Amino acid sequence: MVTTNRQDVTKPAGRLPRNVWALSWVSFFNDTATEMSYWLLPQFLVGVLGAGPMVFGLIEGAAETVSSFARLLSGWLSDRFRTRKPLVAAGYTAANIVKPFLAVAASWGQVFWIRFTDRAAKGFRGAPRDALLADSVSPSQRGSAFGLRQAMDTAGALLGPLAALALLPVFSGKVRAVFWLAAIPGAVAILLAWLAVSEVRTVGAVRETARQVPGQSVGEVRESPRASVWNQRLTLMMVAVGLFSLGNSSDLFLILRAQNLGVRAALAPGLGLLFNLVYTSLSWPAGKLSDRVPRRILVVLGYFIYAAVYLGFSLSRGTQLVWVLFAVYGTYYALTEGVLRAWIADLVPSASRGSVYGVFNWLAGVATFPASLMAGWLWRHYSPSTPFFVSALLSCAAAALLLLA
Image (cartoon, rainbow, N blue to C red):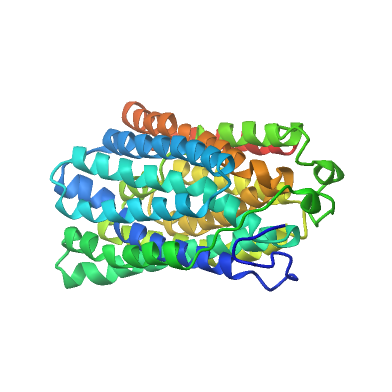
């Protein structure tokens, strides 16, 4: 293995390389900036700009769709030119330059284009970042590395809503002021992405795939750089992810449902705070656990938890369960986000990881557009509980399919 910064990616378990920590801190500050604004968007769009549920579906669905296509492109580029850091840093830069413009948005159409650009930049950095992270560690540390980055990401998502809750009273409830202040952690993320993250280039992946790590099957170990990337196990995983994503509409619908059940709009950042507290606390432990048990089992469990949460939102008739459901929802994310990416690294050699991560994120993202539009349509033409019931059914179907992986 050859690295441009002489990093040793075969360090013993428990000592993650500096690059993993650098990428994790970038995620922390970036998500702090994002979440300071994200949980205020429903209040901003409804109370200030006069938008409705269908607009949420359009904005978030289009934003996630362009994000998924950007991941597909950047993943391919990172494999084609064997460089990942510039794509990662450029994505963080573009996203944090455009986000402060929410403070001057005068219509939901302007919010649409700001979110569109922000999510496109997020997508552009996603696949190369995941590939760079996987290249930076030994096979026995993959779950831990992805879990740490996810934990730091959600720690930022925890600080973001907390900052929004603290700042709103200071500025008499003016959300535009909070949007401006979100530019500060965004600027820190940009600087760290360019100055602290290092490129790690690998030549082949023979040494990675010649040894078995906890949670891998024999079939995974035999996979080599010269073998077909799209093995049966990986293909089945991708199909399950696509099926699940067809019911995984924007999380803004959870906020709308909470408000529909009686939770005050001003408490929306508090819901985000609770969700991200659980997500942050469990992400790294879940990643470490996936280095010791089959990652598939944790993902299946996460999908069933998702189904239970959405069924709870469908059946609830008051505010009693809302806070509990948001807390449990964080468990689903902790069990799936980083673990799925570590599982892909088990199945795919380094030379193809950027492209496969791009396809993975593309599948998840491209389904978000119809999922969000469908959720908005079901909400409007049937009832607010209907889209959550449909999502629960699709999640159970995806979990059953993954049991075959």
